[in-house]
Length: 143
Length: 143
DNA sequence: GTTGGTGCAAACGGTTTGCATTTAC
DNA sequence: GTAAATGCAAACCGTTTGCACCAAC
Image (cartoon, rainbow over all chains, first blue to last red; front, side):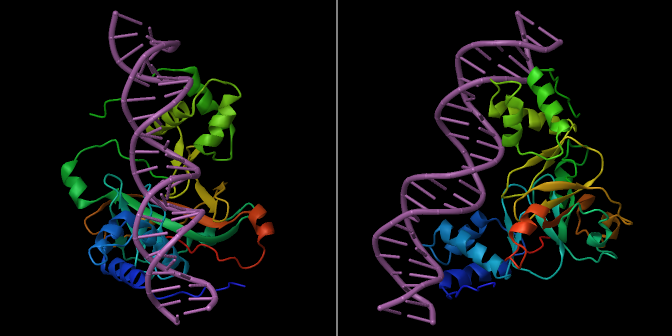
């Protein structure tokens, strides 16, 4: 079980991983593609997607699917939280501890096997606070 | 500010809302389209999308977005949690209470104005447990 | 030499949009 | 009568995929 596929160390994969780890911006695949392209001008977007998938599969990076529409990626895999600006979509790390694990408080899982929970904070980033100091329509929290 | 647009009570909007509220399945736009179509055979998918957007904007329904997958909608707007099957994407309600509010435990918001947090549980639904009782690759928890 | 990976381009699937027409108000 | 909403179809955009060639092992 869990047949690990033999991976090859291609320069593309190495550089994609390197560049992602060098960033704290949780880039989208497209953004990372533009950055990697500066070092590998002939790389294709498909290769970036494929390698992000592989790196995620092997647990070397995080895939933040909870973002907006586009997936965002994170080279930092230690346990931490994220806050997303409801106005511009920007994501930032939050270093903090929770005194409880919400998973332990699920009373009736309805037959589900509860595996994890994903806490995402929502707010307004410094830049967007300046632009709209007042009362914007604002997205409602999503459950 | 917050200029509310004048809405019209079209039969389409009313029936879309009605049918969504009658369901506990958190349907996708496409699924709801198929259901609504039984009562309004000439309705278009675009109309369903537009009305779901409007209803969400006005706070009458919830929009459950996960990047990379289809959005799902919920006619039940009272505070409750959701668990999503990492295998088939199915969503179910969780009625439960948390003894704390994670928002109160953010120590360094990094200039963000923290507004809310969104807790989503991940697991395997009963149907998918039967199909794969053993150890699947499995998605890692997302933060 | 084998087989995983790449570059390219085309396909895919969910969602949005432009436009002429309809309809709620 | 006016402006919002509809139906339709085409466009959009992030992502995936088929394929011939390339390269890590």
